[in-house]
Image (cartoon, rainbow, N blue to C red; front, side):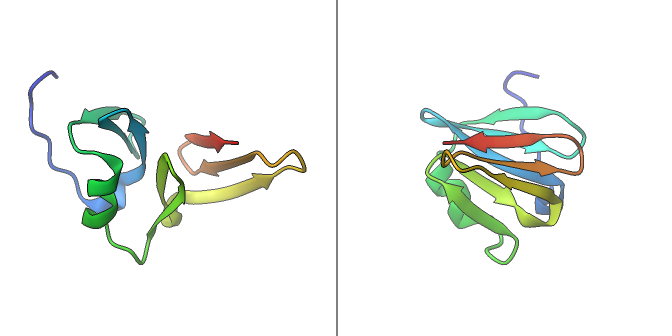
Length: 89
């Protein structure tokens, strides 16, 4: 819902992706919420023992990653248990 503040625990966050001056927060229930904070701000808020910045546009929760596919062409894709896939080159 637009303009609604939604608090979530870090363990239900699959990843946070940069979306310009905003961030897309991907949740374990399959939903995505748009947040007005930048990815840099999210990097400082999330626990460093489980969240890793794996690309300039992406922070992931390592507890939800089940597969990493690194290809020869320097692209990478990570999958989490809920089917959400992160990809970048």
